[in-house]
Structures are given as C-alpha cells and as structure tokens.
Image 1 (cartoon, one colour):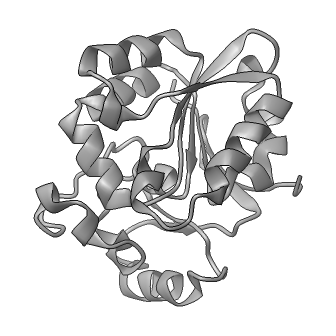
Image 2 (image 1 turned 60 degrees about the vertical axis):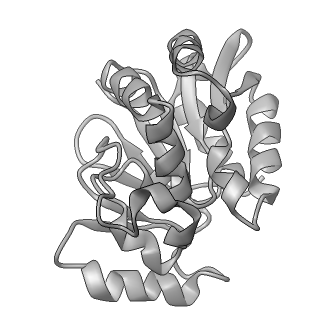
Length: 212
C-alpha cells in the first residue's frame, strides 16, 4: 500500500515523520533525496533544511539529482533506498527532468509497490494527476519540453491536487488564485507551511507539525 507525506516545507513538519513513517526513521535507513526541482528556482534554502531534518532523524541522505544520472542508476538507487523525497522548486522543470530520465516511471512503480514517499512543495504537487493548475505559482518557461502546459500529466500517486504554501508569502496571491479557479472542478487540498497531508489507509489527513 502506498504511503505519502506531502508537505509545503518539510523541515517545519519533519517531527511528524516518526509517527507517520516509523519504519524509515532511525539508524540504517536511507532516503533517495531528489533536489532536482530546486535547480530551476530562486528559492533553495529548503533543500539544505530538509537534509538537516533527515539527518537529525537518523536517516542517511543519498542525494540523487536525476538530471545527472542515467535511468538505470536512478532506478537502482530508488529501489535500494528506504524512502523517496522530492524537494521543492519549479514543478514544470521537475516533471520535464523526471520524464527525460525515466525517473517518473521508477518513482511511480516504487511508491505503488509500497515505498514511502515524502514530497515538499513541488515534490507534493508532482504527486497529483496533473500539474497544469500550478502555473499560477511556477513558470512553464523553465520546461520547454512540456510546450507550455499542454501535457502535464504527473505521477498520479494521489487523486487530489495539493496546494502548498497556502496563505504564506510570497505565494499568498497565487494560492488564492489557484483555489478560486479550481476548487469545485477538482479535489483541491491546500496546506500551510506548518501542515502536511498524510496519504495511506483511508481518507487523506491534514496534520499540523511542530516547527523545528
């Protein structure tokens, strides 16, 4: 069964991990840490913050930038490591690079087979069925292969569309626009920077984290 923890800022809610995914916390576990989305973003502080958060929880960080690895190496490390983390950044660039290196297939298959998944911002959005809605927040210019947002089919790991950074600067206006345009058409789930959505058994749950 798939288990996902979708976040806006992982470092703010990392304290939830031992409760939500106890099997991956502690000595000897390793996270396939995918920071690729941050390569196309001016905000990168969250990547190092997430690394430190995992390290404090006793999880070894295996940095896996899909833009620099072969499809075979990506699949090998995703299969080997105990959980998958995808960072924030530009969601369209992330989708482009996952497709270019066949990482989208490897990730989807691993999570469907039961590998735990942690998403942060773009890493949460990419779990949705389609990411076109996030163009109010992220620029499609970073991903020319996608030709705008004509084909933005994403990982499809959840049936809803996460809206990270709800009510938070500098995304306050864009998150409100997204909700006003798409809420009612799709299942939209906004979350603040101190919240996370746990997906597993039953209905997805909105959780509040303890800021570290």
